[in-house]
Image 1 (spheres, rainbow, N blue to C red):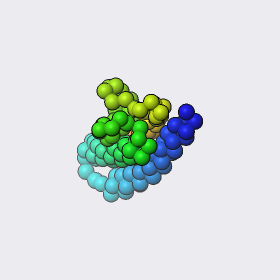
Image 2 (cartoon, rainbow, N blue to C red):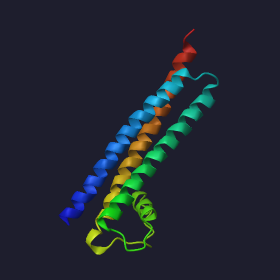
Image 3 (spheres, one colour):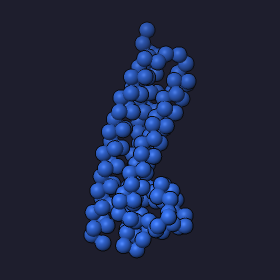
Image 4 (spheres, one colour):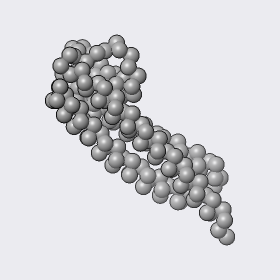
Length: 145
């Protein structure tokens, strides 16, 4: 059981690093785009939010691939299972239950779910921060001569 927790924690840590780096890069890129953009405020705000959401979805997909590779490396899923599907179901906490981990790795699925919940919460916070900063920037531009 301890080894399962260690493996799950290690994969979670890799995903936290990925999410951190990806988030910092996306925010930096979006800040540059927002600072150089001109035109209608609502269109700019919509574009920034769509770009942020898509960038974060790409990060989550990469993190799910990391989980699927971990499942492959440790043999956590039954033979013939679609590892990417299994990782998606666990990470998103969907939990269909049609693919179950092998007995010796049954704690890894819930750890993936815990990791996914944390990363989705983080992404939600990032989306709201980007929204708030973009609105603040637009308001300051509207006030300046």
